[in-house]
Image (cartoon, rainbow, N blue to C red; front, top):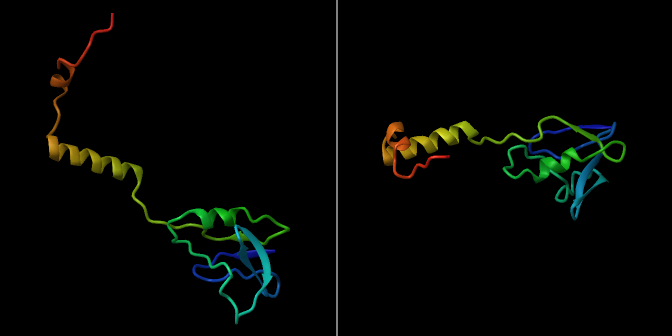
Length: 113
């Protein structure tokens, strides 16, 4: 049994798409799909900044649950190198460009003997 992750849609599974998933506390369970009562059903949101829901989907294992396919998470965040370059630029604006010679011959250096 396979279910496709569709953004902001309920999970529909089974050959007739008449089953869905809801959370019972922290545990997922398979329930019959009722279009008139969808409040408790899980809705997939790949843009959710919290990883909890996407992780839960990765733990759905066949045959107890349908195997989810598709995009689990799609969150726009700055990359490590963008954050690092931004930090370097901020320090340069605040303190100016450093001088390697001054750094090496400063009073705060020591000699290993």
